[in-house]
Image 1: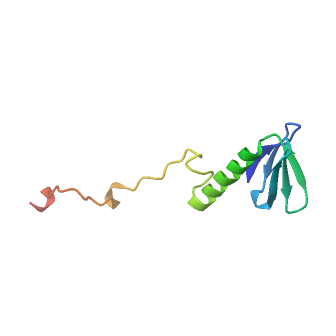
Image 2 (image 1 turned 180 degrees about the vertical axis):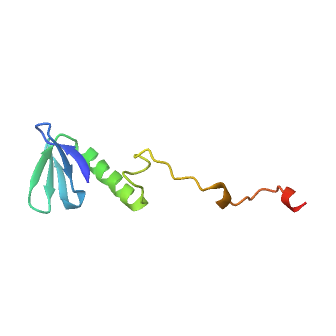
Image 3 (image 1 turned 60 degrees about the vertical axis):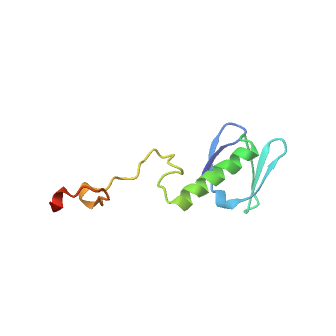
Length: 93
């Protein structure tokens, strides 16, 4: 899902899987597979970028957004689960 804005400034969340084509005429017209056409304020290039970012998020498996956009870090492993690859052999002496 991507966020876009209609010409009358009303925000809209759009299922990007339904986008068939995007035209810049000079307004941005999004044609959906349902036959509906939406005219939005964002330039066509920005709509494409939002779709790509959304799909990156889906394929990367990150929760709530892509490329760390949610601000969440990967949880750290407990100390007992870490493998020590160092050369400290005090435990063996």
